[in-house]
Length: 276
Ligand SMILES: [Zn+2]
Image (cartoon, rainbow, N blue to C red; front, side, top):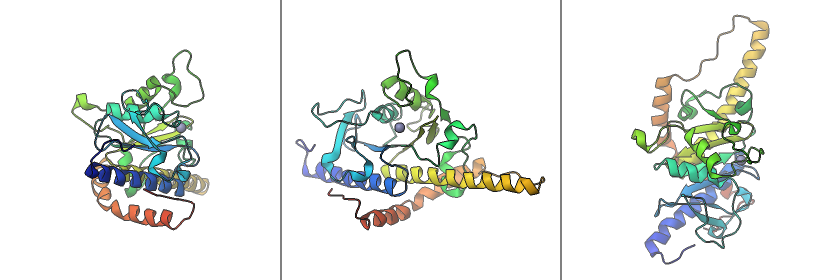
């Protein structure tokens, strides 16, 4: 992938490759990704290109040779002879296309989150680590975006499905925003997609989206059990608008702390190899 880059450019890229491999391993370690799902990042030197791994389980990728450059415009590989890529890479390309400030995207099938994609129970920001979820997390229903001839396997297989998903994050450059209104969108019967301005923050948001879902499920079950015995049980109290705003500002300032811990966890686990 190096081409004719200068040594400075190659040094910059090498750090992104290393972070990408670490990020993929961290997401697997925390069960946000299993054999499926993927992380990507916008090329730091060319905003019209994004990078993600070849079609492989994220835990098993180990080298920059596993990574492929794609054009944001149409999700085609820069190298026509590149290895096979992920079918759902249109999720990533369409989000990069619509939101110039997005520099990393994660798509997950987290089993903790999936119940909130089809049950009608809205996912809500429950605690300070997940204020980035905002007051509302949209649910995108692929059925609404399908056209005659599309396969109904819930996968984002083409540009128009990816574009529809990207639109559901709302907000755009036309509105004066490089970043979307929402950071996370749930995908009915499938999983979720999360966007961020850098890879570390995207990984952090994905992990804490899953933790928030687990906490909310526990709270709903606790409340249901309490209602059996105490009909006057208090309502669940989610984060307010001000709490959402203030935690979204403050929590990322400590992003280095979980990243360093998660890095040590994957370095200490011999399942993962990172040669970048
Ligand atoms: Zn998927």
